[in-house]
Length: 259
Image (tube, rainbow, N blue to C red):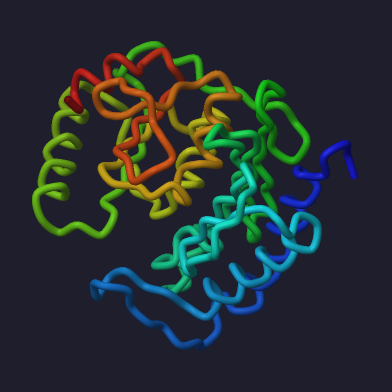
């Protein structure tokens, strides 16, 4: 391993989670709900998070964990692993092949590392602070598009079916009237952010995301030359947040629409 071993450990953990995804994908398995009928959890979510924590604790037993599916006892460590064991659960549960595993590491709430793995496409996106962003070992960068017209954007609806959903639909309408190429709703915020980072889309927004949804992707976008803020351009902290990500060149134009 490298000097710290953090990156190698994260890669090992996402690959192990990916094996679990592949084992269950397109098979029959129990599907449960969390809070709302459309906030799903599967055996793959539970098993993958358990495996990720097991792998990381094998190397860094004193570190803290923030995971989507479980609560973990807090330690005195300044390091925290932020884990989404299966981002895109609703897709996964319906055999739609758009999902991933996302792991970030923060020290005193400053992101050091982000690793996101799409096991079906075998795409490993990653970034370390101040070291650039990569896809399967190749350096990636955001798109060069400098205006909304001609941009491809991505959004998400989270689990809201009320005001936030209606506002998102209204913003989609506004963006489309500005002659963007189109809006996609893929169902995995972590992958959405990766796609901005590697130039497949020029921007992404979503009203409510949890830290495990965006932490790794935020760092990957930033290290690829992009920008990630709240809807008013504010700094995003590692807490439930409104997220706007872009190649940087269209960021102000996106914010003007989303305010």
